[in-house]
Length: 261
Ligand SMILES: Nc1ncnc2c1ncn2[C@@H]1O[C@H](COP(=O)(O)OP(=O)(O)OP(=O)(O)O)[C@@H](O)[C@H]1O
Ligand SMILES: [Mg+2]
Image 1 (cartoon, rainbow, N blue to C red):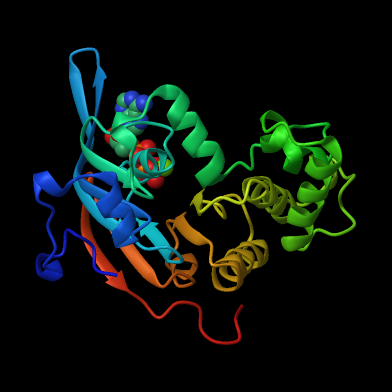
Image 2: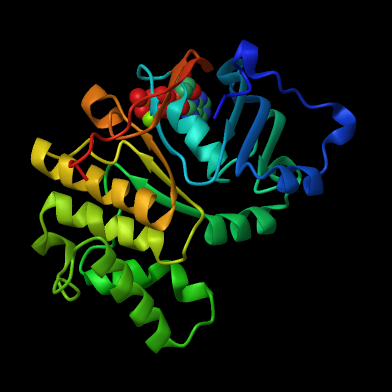
């Protein structure tokens, strides 16, 4: 569970060994090696990520913390294949994301990644079931199977009986659970949640974190959560602190205390 940036990780890649077969054999789901993301805004260069090296194993539950503007969302967008590094390498399940074409990136995203955002991003005037079903519409599955998968995902997040509700008829916490169901419906390897409790009250936040904990513990889902709140971060078993585009601390934490999930 050591991050590559830790001095005692004792683990560096030789350029000649960077091929996908090796990384798949090594088993880590995420490997970033000296990843940079530089935005060019006119004459101004914004270095949003400055040499991030990171390794995340399958089944980990990681909290990403850091001040506003430190690069947390940029990191999540890269890990989620929404974007490619400016420099450095990112292997997702042994695949070199930096070398993937736009089509391959989209395919990787739809098969491997589930996203959850602060604002839920649900489609209004569309039922919970149809919202959860949305990612499957390009898969060519029979409609009946799409609905069955969406219903199962809603049940998994504790929303039985709410299939036909519109987002406006659901509480914030319930809407976020629909968003989690939508992220789960394609059976991704990783769930990336960028401040998923940022718009929620304490009780709904606790419910959302308990759902994520269950998915991690019972289904083995790899979960990364960006948060500003220390209390939310305590659900994770590992805490990464980002500052000015760099990982400045990467430590194992206790995870959710027994009886809380
Ligand atoms: N598309 C973009 N174009 C130019 N600069 C960007 C872009 N996206 C992010 N940045 C800059 O990169 C830096 C990191 O931004 P990022 O959104 O990753 O921060 P964050 O840690 O998620 O902050 P917050 O906690 O406020 O969400 C900031 O300086 C930001 O202004
Ligand atoms: Mg952000």
